[in-house]
Image (cartoon, rainbow, N blue to C red; front, side, top):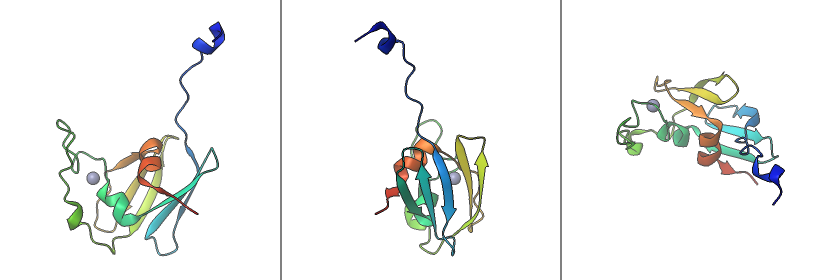
Length: 112
Ligand SMILES: [Zn+2]
């Protein structure tokens, strides 16, 4: 390993280059810098909401009961936060979750 290899910065987390909401707003599809395409249903995204109302800030435990998120929930709005995250608002009125790219990459599933 050369000197230059050791001082290389840590790889920057991959970010999405394109975000598509399904026509019926029931799912989100993402295209990533590295060419991967992933998607997740609105229900999964709502269940994984990382905000302080859904996850205990101190213990990091999820306080939201996933069973209480209906299967027919939809995404009402999505808004970029800088170039590192998305804010999603759901049809249950919940819109405080900020989803950074690495979290979205983790909770979405590769598309065929
Ligand atoms: Zn939340």
